[in-house]
Image (cartoon, rainbow, N blue to C red):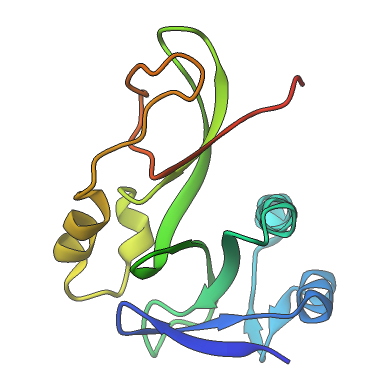
Length: 152
């Protein structure tokens, strides 16, 4: 059974593994569209990442507004302040070439439907960006979580 929570005054849902499996199979959850066929692989990749990093991340569903007929899917990162919206992405350090996964809270799309998004983004970036975990240099994108990628 899914858990309901509020993040930044926005209602979100955390699905169980079984609920995610069913939603991915059917393409809907609670009678609302979860994805369009071309975006299914992206949602599956987001779920794989979340399952591999379940101690720190959750994959949540929310609606940008009451009249929206599809779910938005977002990564949440557990922080000392509570759940933080993040965009998980791959980057490469410009200094040493290390390939990294980062959690970036500065992507504007993360805050659709949130009234005070600028303040929330300011709070998320207040501690500054993490640096490359291989060489300590500045990363090409803002990061509040970093992990080295395994050899691909």
